[in-house]
Amino acid sequence: MDGVAWEGAVQLRPLDFNVGHLRRMRLDIEVRLDRRAVLVPVVVLFSNHCYTRSLRDGESVADALYCETKGGGVIEHRVLDDMRLGFSKQLPRMLEQIAHATVFQGSGQVFYRVKEDPARGGDCGWYLCLEVGVNVAANELRLTVKSCHYRSTRPANVRGNKKRFFAFFNPMYLRLRAKHPWLVAQEKTKAPQ
Image (cartoon, rainbow, N blue to C red):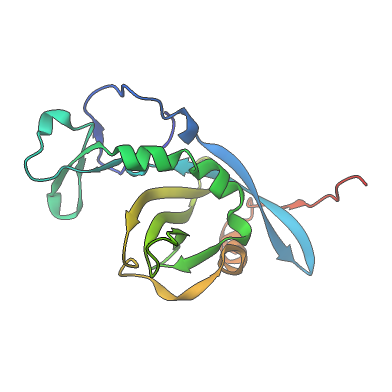
């Protein structure tokens, strides 16, 4: 898999299941520049947190797929999460439709896309933790899916109400482009009629 793992993560053993659906992908996100629609190329990466979870009390470290060093030197072991793995098969399609999807803004350049659970209501659902960033060495604008997990409450760092992703992305892209002139958008062409 050519996705990403958390910085400081070490893969402990080969994966005996398929995560080919989580390969890096390219996505064109529409933004508005000078009242015209343009497409911004974005590289999408998926972290190992899309199909693993923290080791729980009573589980064996021998089952861990990854070992990660978190802030403060805390070691975390990650094991396969069958529910996350199953849900992760929807991620590429969900991201293809991200521009018009509703998201919550987190801190910095982090966003949360929610696939709500109407059976449970409230804030219950699958939360995708997304981060927009720039890889200067590769001249890439990146959208990293840092995690996907089911929860019954909003993440603690959510600010405000949901908005369409493009409402957050458009001004962020303009700020990033001012710092990195190589972030060039492409003219959107109309589909043949």
